[in-house]
Amino acid sequence: GIPWIVAPGEAEAQCVYLQKAGQVDGIITDDSDALVFGGDRLYRHFFTNAKKITLFLQRDMIKELNLDQQRLIVLAVLLGSDYCPGVNGIGPVKA
Image (cartoon, rainbow, N blue to C red; front, side, top):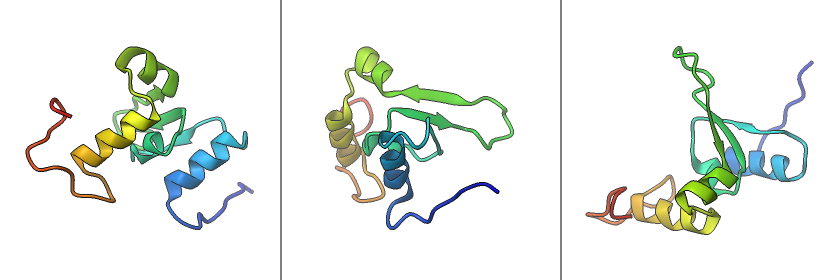
């Protein structure tokens, strides 16, 4: 009885679309791509045995780390992601 859909492409992009459309309150995933796609409420480690869920809020990332969506995209390109290998010699500190 739980409604579900099949994403036409990247699942995290579909989740962000549903969130922005007001259809869901947050995104449960261990893939941080949802942040790069513009998700503003992400729950990670939901299905681990540690029983400690981590909540990432877009507003906190902007306020505390100065990482808006555009900067997250650049960070993903520099570090590498599902879509690109990253820049050789650039790690999290330099990025």
